[in-house]
Image 1 (cartoon, one colour):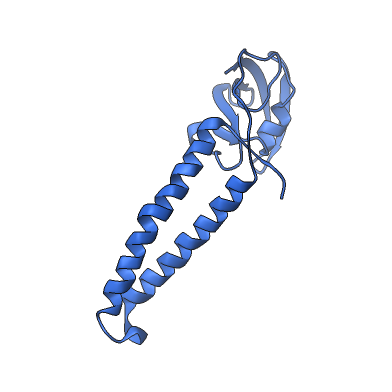
Image 2 (spheres, rainbow, N blue to C red):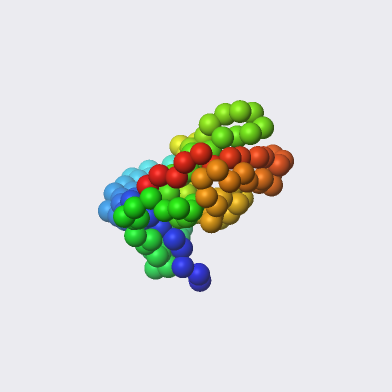
Length: 156
């Protein structure tokens, strides 16, 4: 499996989620299964089925996150603002199509949260921005159509 880029904060968030799943959620679902078993006939026990489904979901997520952590590569934070857009920076853009300013932080795929301005380094917008400088105009092919941006600022 290829290395998965992370900011230090993003990796810490994944580690905390995995720890929570193992130490809290896994224990809670085991208790729920034990309680449901105590109710008798398992063939018609909706609580038991729901607890088993939740257990499968939790175990699947634990396996997924363990694999992600095994392949994680932390990209160290930048010490100074770079001349070009790269992983870990915040980019202030002017959407030329609607005359609106947007700010995106370029992060790893498991840190992506577009609603909060964090976009994956693998997203169409990030791929189009990487290597560009302040003042460059960028045309991005997105699922919603072609978008045009001007890079206004790069921050760390």
